[in-house]
Length: 142
Image (cartoon, rainbow, N blue to C red):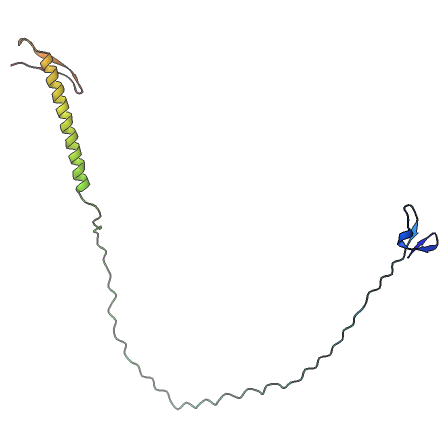
């Protein structure tokens, strides 16, 4: 309930602009739980004393010789490398080199023959052949 101008009204009779005073009463239920626990038991029996140690009459020590181990051997590493390649690629490279040299010489010879056939001397003066990759040279007629 709300106090509106001294009278108690419900929430449905309150309008906008009214001055209202209210008191909040909060009731919470309290639950009390009480319990008592009683535990009974017996303590374990004390541990039994260890058995008595027999008295020492005498100690006999027998030393057995250990077999002599041979001295450690030192292994010497060899300076040989494993054979992983062959000479076949080198032989192929030389073959290719000689093939190119042969073709180059054949081309130079054909060029030389064509130049010498086109230029013929009269026998009195040397014939000069055109420029080759190595420069020009002269032919001497005998």
